[in-house]
Length: 574
Image 1 (cartoon, one colour):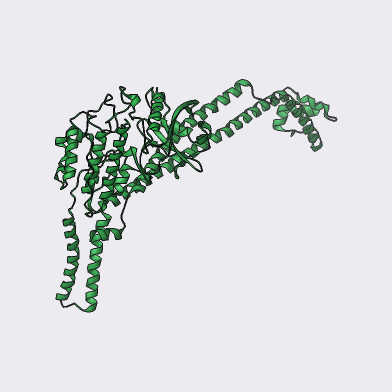
Image 2 (cartoon, rainbow, N blue to C red):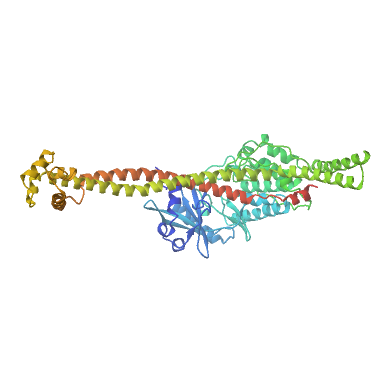
């Protein structure tokens, strides 16, 4: 059984920060929630999951561990000392707090970190694919960062798109679980990083300064490649990489990407690619530091949304789509000119047919313009980015429908839970009434009908009439009434008054509470039903939390899409 709570346990606990935390900042904060599901937003990784908490002035990322090594406390203590001592701007303020978060009656450690507002590296790249100088500037900043880390004897250990955040103040690094500091010298690494950024032979013993060099070479080569040819992004980006995959590193000679890079007319890029290819067969810690990043020549790049294909998958882990041919700018221009030419030919055909008047010319021109716009609109609607948007929107709508169904199901189960209390109370009241009625019946059955002779004027003759009618005691009198031969209205009223006196006497000794065995039987019955319903509600709640997380991820991905307007498309494709 795992030492750490499950993801759903953390999600349930963090909804009450004032209860689950002791840190004064966190107890007064509120967790950020998905607008649709009202469930906490969560970012899930291999070893932990992160929640966003905020108060009126500050925001924090709270990292909750789902699995980790036994030395986690010592590791974070040494990390904190080294990072604080370096005074480098790439790290964010964080604090490891032991025995902090209360989950299922037990406290667990967390990492409280300053929240970083910015774009992850892959989203930054996607938004700037047609701005080559921005990509090259980013590569230069990453190169400077790794050099400064090495100067302080540090290495991040998992340099990849999800751990590099582009902010208005510069680069920021997050997730320090795999980081190397001098105090860890001679010890194995806690993790090996994302395979699509790591040396193919990296193992736990490869843990020292220089650990980030191979990852840096991977990223810089990818950024330079995209600055040269943006269409590479949607041919080789999978969601878990930049361009390269672990298979490219294991067998560079068979790598399609390495072959593609060698065909690009960019000498500096080919140098980078050759360095990376050679680094794949060298010691993981001895990869070369990339040389200076090239400066863009100023040539205008065709926007990525015009020239590239987009993968259809939108899940967290995506396979690379089958490559589709990308038109060169010359072929694209030829198609555009062809569309206009077809319109001119249409006008000329009308003229040669003797139909060319001012009105006919206007009509022909309008037809030609309309034909061109329809052709452009068809190409615009076929843009990979729009296809991806439609796919995401369909996925999001399905998730929302599932979420509404699950929420409705949960509400119905909660109504059943509420109804159980009413049913239990009703059953107990019915059982008490049954006991009281049984007591009263026993009491009345022991009163002989001859007791009516206590009423003045009623003697053996009237009593004999009751007995002849089969009424021999007060219970039978109550059930059948005083309607027998020889009993008039006056006598009937007197008999009913006497019967009421007997019933009041019976009620004085009737039970007012259930016997303990009956009480236990009913209570146990409904307790079991409540447990079964609580289990169902818990299962539905976990499904709601999972779907809520998927909705948040889909909404975030949809928000990050960069789609041109139709006018922008026309401007860039004429």
